[in-house]
Length: 336
Image 1 (cartoon, helix red, strand yellow):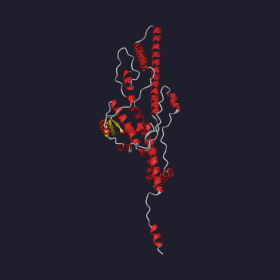
Image 2 (cartoon, one colour; image 1 turned 45 degrees about the vertical axis):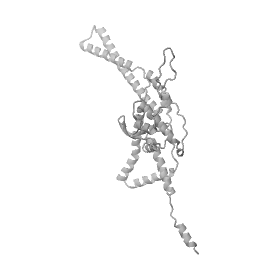
Image 3 (cartoon, helix red, strand yellow; image 1 turned 180 degrees about the vertical axis):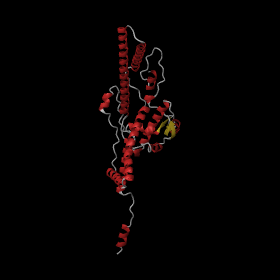
């Protein structure tokens, strides 16, 4: 019988591929890392909430300044009024009281003019840089919060026992294994109701158009990415900037619910896959990967074009004709 050798050969065939447990743990670790990066980067806070928080902070500072000047003005007026009454009762003031009266009247006039200069609080116009700076501050605080557990584990392992590190590693692996191939839903939290009530004059942002997810295998995402980068770089050139940071492009995409699974480290590779050139550049004192206008024009084969609603209207109205009602936002801002 020759069946024994065949059985031996069947059992000696080597197994290939990653074991399911290791593959599940690796997938879970990746999903947890993406979720932590999304939270630590401050991407759970939308631009509308950041705008409202900045406006609320400035409104409170304005109210505090007005209240302080009003209090000081009332005190100065009261002091001057009291000195004038003393002068009427005594038929005049001594030299020291005359100096105090002049100082009180000067302080009262100073605080009155300060309140007039402050006036009513007006809603400030915030640019993307201010919103980005606020998000960076939130991200810095959250990154510090993330380092606290790691620092505690290292300190406990060094000062107490190495079992702390062992149990931490086992717990992290167990969490990754339990998560498996189930990605987190990367969302932007809604604006708190008390913040909306505190900033009633801030108009909410218009809801972005629902963008259907583009299947990666079809290649349509490349055209979507190239069109977005073309519009963003053209808009930056209109504002006098020759390039746009890769991180700024990614934040703009993710704020509208696109390319949420990418980070600032993986996004440049996605740009390269779409045929978009980038290189290190310094913009506003910050250095990082950026897409330049001239390099993008060479890659596209034409100058980057603006979206239709941002194209400046350079037409002029003839005398006697009514103004054109379809001026572009750039022209309206210049006219205003």
